[in-house]
Length: 260
Ligand SMILES: [Cu+2]
Figure: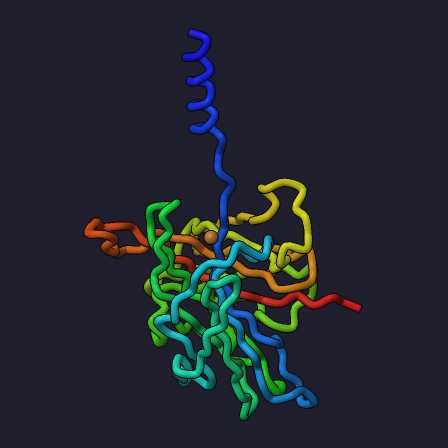
């Protein structure tokens, strides 16, 4: 009986020890959020799939399905420019983009569906990051999902560059052109594992959108902040002959500067 109880205790413990939420984020980080007249007219972009706060473990990112930029309302495909870079044996991607004129550059990326056995589903994070160049300061609020094949997106309501730590970031979640009421948005700071969270729950912050798909979050610290609105995708994808659901994430990255 005693042995049986011990066995039961072990099984129950295994069942009820919650695995911490592992928040994976597609990341697309430019070398600058604002390119000024005195800067080099180049933007380096780095794409990876990882856990930003903890700085790993790195996840495999196959060559994205789509990658490009929208500027002056024109879509420019940049997929062919991506170069593979291995981190801990996993693929990440990088490129350098030449800025030729003033504009708000809306970079977008749609990864290949990522099979996550632990969650029994695929993950696709449609990701955006917006860089202002040479004083244009307009165009950042344009929705681009329909033109770029992203399915879903966060359209910023706060200008998504030249922000300070402490600013409130507000965005609106869209899926197939419609706002997503009550969307759950995970928020993570790119800590690269250098900052210790007081508890596991502090690693990923969570906010919910209102009935219009609008959410806000005050960024308490300088650095890159990722916002991922997570939704169940409308389509299934086959994995080993079985239909599996797809977690669709609308992700946007913004940079908060230190205010001197
Ligand atoms: Cu992960």
